[in-house]
Length: 103
View 1 (spheres, rainbow, N blue to C red):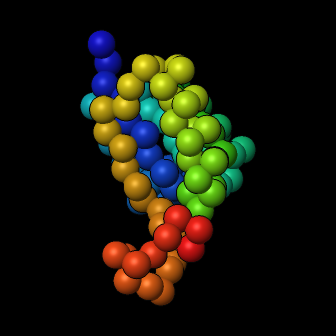
View 2 (tube, one colour; view 1 turned 135 degrees about the horizontal axis):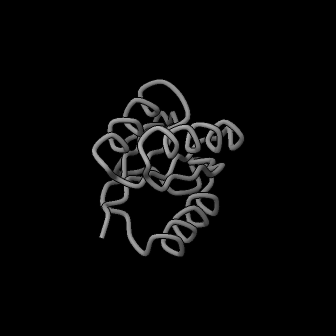
């Protein structure tokens, strides 16, 4: 079974480079990005260039429901994720041990 890479912020910059590296190594790739249209476009380019299965999804990592929906979609499509790269973040000025999900 082919390994699956899931990359947030995967439609541009470092995330796009990571997605391409994974595809070049034969991994199926899920490109997650706030810009869903660009995620779709970049995933299609990776599939065409490397012959892997790839798709893009719009995901807002600051929204737990959005992340959970993406995880469910990946699970439904591939049944697993072998590599998950959290390439984006949410800026929060608080100690990690005191921060809540709502923050």
